[in-house]
Image (cartoon, rainbow, N blue to C red):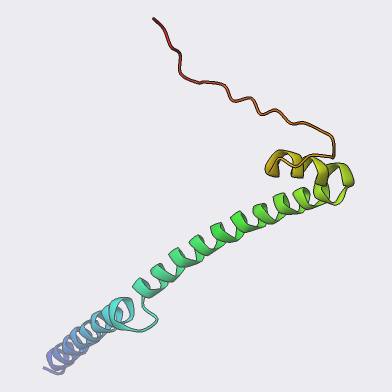
Length: 105
């Protein structure tokens, strides 16, 4: 008789523990401010920010190389001639543009 009461009490306690555990796990995974879904979104944002960081690091390296080239007299002159079509006094510049379409008759 005591054994049956203990088993019934133990089973109800286990059922209550399992129910509370399921509610707690659901709450922590989906409803809490630090939930699994929030962490998943934050991890995705971290990955995108790290890829942007790598991109900008590479851009900085390229810009530093270009800056080093422009700091020399020949480099700045070459850049001015190619990009802005500048010239020295008494110098003529001819720009040759080729036709990329073929005219076949």
